[in-house]
Length: 331
Image (cartoon, rainbow, N blue to C red; front, side, top):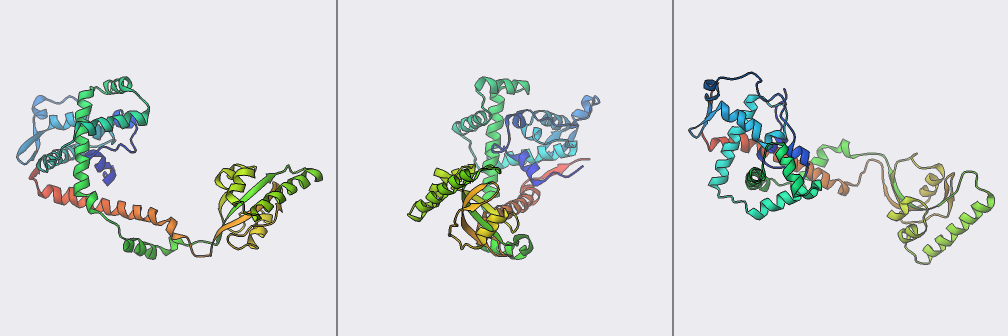
């Protein structure tokens, strides 16, 4: 069985409104979580751990497994993992209380409203979904309040202390040069006049005449992107004719030859291909071995942030948090 990841355990500690749907939030079960055989009352009352001197019984562990929405977002947890989650839950609750974190009714209302909007349901449908999980609205609101408090604690103790500097991003690019190099590329846009492969000479001439007229308007000052939106006969017209990036050999031969003769910003004469007639403009070029890093910096920043967040979370959960409380787990 795999060990829970940081994301798994973050889920046990806090709500995940941005990525969890209604079914994921309310209906995911924990498979193979509890032993199926009956257990004697003496065994259920057995103390399996203590948190700051407060006993934790096997019965509490099993009830926690049945009722915790946070656990329902994970699957196939062992009883030892559920115990660990319950202990963490108790410690986090103490931290919330000690730090005076308060969640307002308006915050709970806003969260529940976002759940309804995201899943396009009304109050009645939400309550039906809750009932199907053996929960009423009051219990759900209590769970949401606890989760929002945990989010505030996490933001204060972890997220607010994790930063990624420009130097971190530069160092990452330097250490991963091979991942951010590639062949030469060109980014082009076109204005397209469609023709069937068997178009007659007259039809080709008419399409070329339209292209020449549009080209004249561009040379007289009409913006290329506006001309594409107005005249291009394919769906890229809505995007100003932008076709995106191409490596050598990916374009039709005629377009490949046309773009090679152009500098960035220049516009071609009408070009005939098997698809029709094109007016081509080169938007950008990248030389071999160089990639526009500015477009990738946010992706790298987020990657580094997530790595730092995971490391900080591990320290907070396994070192900082448990050092503040006395925990004993009994075999």
